[in-house]
Image 1 (cartoon, one colour):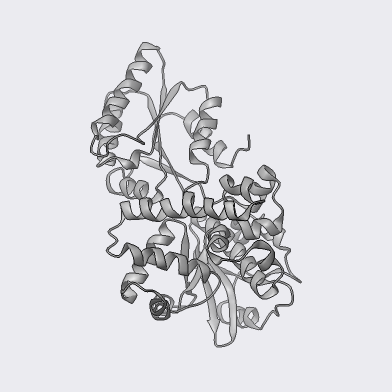
Image 2 (tube, one colour; image 1 turned 90 degrees about the vertical axis):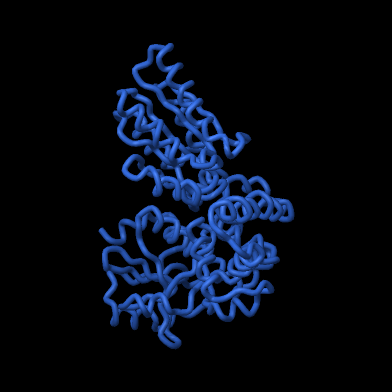
Length: 395
């Protein structure tokens, strides 16, 4: 079975002396549960895995009862250490307070209980960690699947990766696009919006959130003002509400609104945003256009290619704590600007006959980036860039 890079990271941390509980965070359907099952199969640390899915949300005591069961099995099995894995823990009320209570009790009593928590809602999990478990946990981030991963695990070629994206559960359906599109909508988009986000944030206008997400995905790769977006949405709202909802969608690693790169924060955050999906499957599933129609239309295909590059950058930036922007000055533009510790890299995407304008040279003269890169036709091959570890850009 294919193993993601986080397998080694988690296995290594479990083998270490008990210090922090491990929290696996990431968007839906990226293989978090599969990862922990793979580790459990190979680790020498005895343990048990339970799920809070189906437990009444107000039954917070279930966590303590489960923890006591793990302690009993550890004691009766005469184990020097034990591993407790709790899946879907975020579905219980006040889960983080109870986890903190049990973790601190083991620390006080010198119980060598190692703990891993994970869940389908990245938002809920991270909120609980930052609120109650500060200083007691380490994150293992699982982003959307990259092009090399989808190629190795499912034999997906580059063009289909650009269109169908990096959801492993959907790979078997790409031969039947109607079925594939239903899977993305029903098994990924619907629960991500209706469960993860609605359960986490106070969303006064659920209909507006759904419309914003669907419209924003179809604009991936394009700049559009929030005022213009508002004019295309049926549910009444205001620009401040849209900005808040876009921030939530970005936290959920679904849709990002990139700000314009500038030398001061005021100009950055007051700029017209550029929409960008974290996974091109979201753009394709909501676009209403088939793979053949997009692939054979150069003006459409370039936007999918740019979105694939943007998704790769966004997912790696999440792990590396980089910031991502775009840049435009009148007719001159740069598709992506990656920033780390006040240094930046400029990336321009070129596909087919799309011309490379003067944007890179003008940006370089103004901001002196570490690198100015053209990805695609006449530059770095797309398959090469989508295989890069972006941390090497700043080494």
